[in-house]
Length: 297
Image 1 (cartoon, helix red, strand yellow):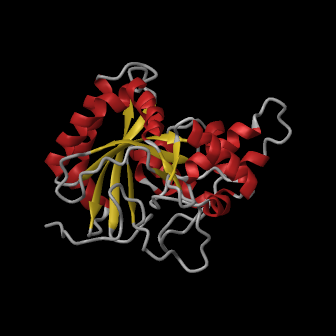
Image 2 (cartoon, one colour):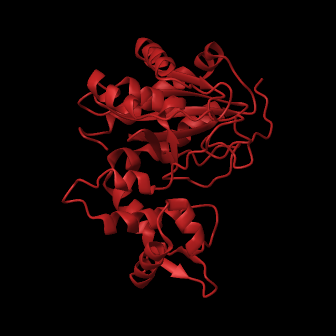
C-alpha cells in the first residue's frame, strides 16, 4: 500500500520553496533571463538588446511574489535600475504590467496571450488532458506532460483529477531536464550531437544528496533509459518523491513529449514503480501518440 503523507514538493514535483538545498549549493533561478545570458550575444549585430532586457524584466515578475519593486527586479535580472525602470514603464504602458502606486509592479492578464497562443497551436498540449486524467484515475497518482525546452523541461498539462495534489494546472512550470524523469526520456531520444550540445552547457544544482551531479552520471542514466524505453528517478528534485516517465511520439516516430506518474510521500523502487504503473503509463503514451500528427509540438 502506498503511503500518502504530506511532502515538501509542489504540484508537479518542483522543490518546495521552504525545502533546504544541499549545503553549499548555489541556487539557480530557472524562470529568469539573466544579464549574463543577454550579454553573450554582444557580438551579434542583429540582436536587439532592448527587447531582450524587456523580456528579462517581464520574466522577473513571474514569481510567487505578487508585487515587485524596481530594486527587486534589478537584483533578480542583474540589470541596472534605470534600465529596469524604463522597461517597467514600457510594459505598463502597453498593458503587460501594472503599477500599484506604491512602487510595486505586477503582471497583467495580457501576458496570458503568450501561453494561450502556444497551447492553442500545440497538438500535444491540446490532446493530452483526457489521457492524463485517465492515467491519474487508473494509478491514483499525479500525472504530467512536458516537452524539452533548451536544458529544461516545460510542463504543458497535468492531471486534474489527482486526489493527492491541488487542482491548479501549472502550465509553463520549468524544471531542469538532467534530474527529472521526463527530462531523461526526452534527452535520451536526442542524437549524439544534439545531446552533446545540451550537456556541454549544463550546470548541475544539487536539490538533494541524490541529485545527478555530473555529465558522466547523466549519460549513464540516459543509457539506461534508451535500453528500457522509460525513465525512473527518485528524490532527484526533492525528498519523498519518485516518478516514472515514458516517451510520447508523433506519427513520424519522433519523441515530442514525455508523460509521467509522480508518487509523493513514499519512495518506491524502480521495480515497484514499473510493476505498478508502467503498463498504464505506456498505454496512455501510446494512445496519445496515435492522435498526434507529425511535428506535434
